Amino acid sequence: MASSKLMPFAYFRGKVRPADSARVSIAVHSLQYGTACFTGIRGFLRDGKIRLFRVRDHFDRLMNSVKIIGFDFDMTYEEFDAMLAEMVKKNQPTSDLYVRPFVFTEEEVLTPRVDQMKFELATYMIPLGDYLDTTRGLKLMTSTYQKFSDSTVSVKAKANGMYLHSSLARTQANQHGYDEALVMDHNWNLVEGSGENIMIVYRGEVIMPPTGSSMLEGITIRTVIDFLREEGIPIRFEPIDRSMAYTCDELLLTGTAAQVLFAESLDRRPISKTMGPVATMLRKKFAEVIEMKHKKSKEWVNEYVI
Ligand code: PMP
Image 1 (cartoon, rainbow, N blue to C red):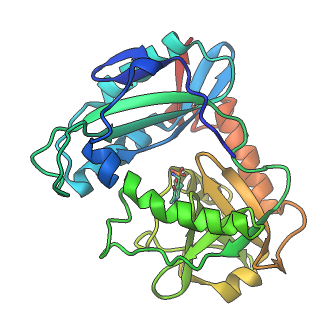
Image 2 (image 1 turned 30 degrees about the horizontal axis):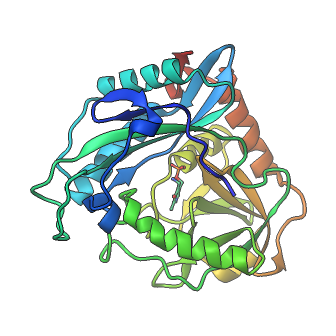
């Protein structure tokens, strides 16, 4: 299991300070009701610097989550970027890492409403290698936990409370001997994993759930869309039912932590024993971006001096 060995410095109450001094009361609203939003950014240690992937897009999604849920919080991209630069300098990372910025409240309010409270940003960093095993295909399970829809909780907000659903699905899959869960929406279409978007290679085309489906809009899958277009591979945004997934050529999961992974099977129906051509191409392109060899590298990668 990916555990969190916090790096020594965190951003908390407006400044970078020792992580073990970043403490809140047990009564804070964010802890009691899950009223917080977050994002997760991957960092790569290269040439004595930390390269963070698509920081601007992560910031925009975080601020959109704040807007969707209606938290009273504001910050500029420049402030966010400066905070990350200071975190990298203070933490002196010696490996690849993961950055977890989140917006939460320290208010000890009992009423479950989000207005009339002040929200603030905090950030921690952890070393992170592979989150799921990237050397083999994953054994997936269709979860019995149905994904909530936007009419129930705003699915496009990456809000902490939503991850109770992910936790139930992932725990169930792992306890049944699978690596990861895929969740279905109210129409019984597959929409995403517990922490990843999904796509299938089906009859020579790539199919992804429509953006308006009950899923988070991942920054990794947006990158994948660019890579597929670059290669001239047709993409269709259409519902994916379970039978299509059972009979596809490749079933892929994408996410910041997971990156690009392929499924060996879904519900014990074999899909592919080895990594297919689309997954192989996508992984290669991701590596090119991080090695600053892709035409989008400059746009997508921020370098921070250690
Ligand atoms: N769906 C869910 C539920 C997630 O938690 C994540 C991870 N943030 C994703 C999809 C993939 O998003 P991203 O590529 O931005 O990490």
